Length: 351
Image (cartoon, rainbow, N blue to C red; front, side):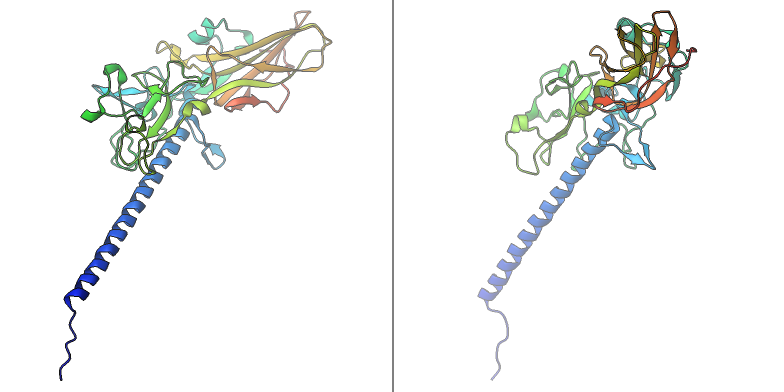
């Protein structure tokens, strides 16, 4: 008697059902894995942008800090239009040298203070002689992938990191217009600024990717883990509130002391002004006995100092009119308050 070894219809239906469920689960799992990888790539892109702009987290190679935009130019990058299309704003200054930005070099502070410093009442002094300030654009600060069209930077889903220029009119998301990925403020120096749509020439204070759906949570409401917007804030890592330390007064009292920090001009008004040096100054008169170390705290809220490699110098003069100068010292300013480890001294009569 021959036995039938084939599948019944019910068995085939069961097998096909199991295969369908398994395929669905595998597809969902693979799709979730793809989204996770894209989220990671997008978050990594934000980290790269943060490092390129404000040097945080610090990127080091062989003990040498990598260049970053704020450190070299003394300001945040501005949102710039994409060629003739004034409705699209990009981070083009990270990959193309901006107008009024000199090529990186070493510039003398001697009688060469910028218009911004002069407007703040800081005029050239003999102490500026011999101070050489490294500054200028030495990008590109962002490594674009091979074949990428500059200045387009894309997240893990292939969406370009560009924004709609709010100055061109109100956004209509239903019409597929670009949500804002580049956000700024009218005064972008980190004191309680609120996110707002960037406009052409506005400093970029916040950058975000918009998740898998490419839509802003501000218009779409709560989003799941793959659609969630993620932001970084270069502005919070860019600015120095104060530089503090100690200086040693001359032995004859009373004495005046002047400390200057030198760096790139944050707001050049002309091509010539772009290569001139900005100076931030602290000065005070002391009436106590000289020869002691006294603290100083240098702040400036008009033209805020930025993080990066800067130069600092001190000079002192006593009641007899004797002026002494310290050597120009390179310092690395950090966001927040930078504290100098060594006491500044002025021992040379030569500026």
